[in-house]
Length: 174
Image 1: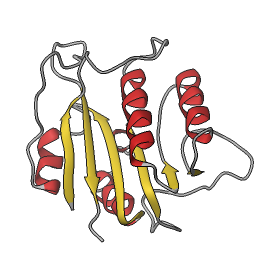
Image 2: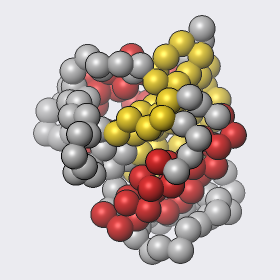
Image 3: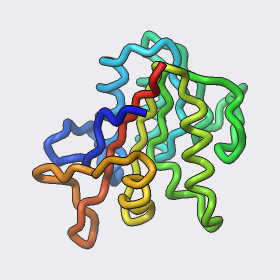
């Protein structure tokens, strides 16, 4: 496991034209990163708001890679994968955009889902994970990956003035 980036997203990250909470920052950052990584396959397990999420999903599907979705969209033939179970395949890039924070109330759920997402990453592939805090504690992931989350200038703040969105990118060694 090689942590490529672990930081709060910043107001300086490019935005899309929608105003649905924080996903606009997460999706834009992830799309730019996918374009630079150039994976052959992407597994999208993301969560979001319908309009913004549909725009993100379309942008992924228009890319030069094969996209396998088990996200919140309801499309015919879409893979139905419970992230609490063994993944049915591996991908070069696995995207988990704000999903673990929705696995309540089972206390073991985030750790189990994290393990299954990591298993879905092919050797040499990448896991990109974003999450809102405090729903998923930064300290929990710092312990999992052995790195500290970097606080950047001008982070995106939540209602209570605390940095809100964390971006984590991990490379799986071959």
